[in-house]
Image (tube, rainbow over all chains, first blue to last red; front, side, top):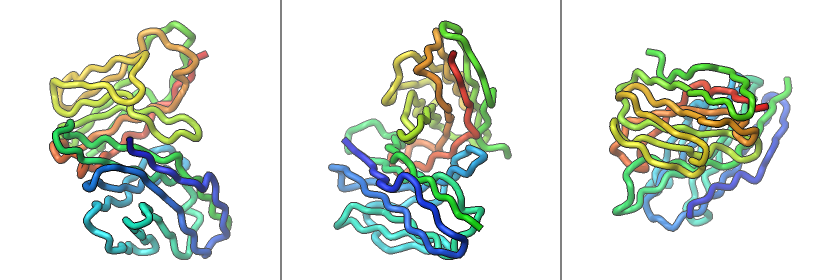
Length: 119
Length: 115
């Protein structure tokens, strides 16, 4: 069974600090996808990034960067120069593609990390 | 283009009452999902509809029923609400047909309290 662990329940930083959110996953499949979602105080879930299991290149988008390491089953998310608007709950999720299984995007979510950025 | 919409935003029920949560998407997506979010547990899949005309159970289906009314709409029904169903409910949709590659897009959520 697939599992996603976000060991950091809450993180508190001061504005302009860098912060890394950890995500460790378990899966028996060789083909899978990893996602990050952001849930701001308003409550909706906002899609941030999708990464497939074949591509271990790190990705950078503005102040956001993602480090995918298959050897350690981790997909960590770093915010550089954090801002108050980054305050949110961040979820890591795993989607498996099992040959012969039902072809739908079943996501397994981690428990979420609450990030608070203080001014 | 509203994306995924859910009604109502908030609801308070008494134990034993029934209600239906509505969800609609305007992205012409084939697949739709219902999740519940409880503190410290992330989101858990209740039911999903891979395509119009099909529905299947997810991880926590007990106490719920769903209807895929058409391609746009997917409703979740609580026949006899229990306090354990107090939660935030999210509807999501995805293009479908792409298996694990599908990206799901979420609605704003419905906060349900069962007294």
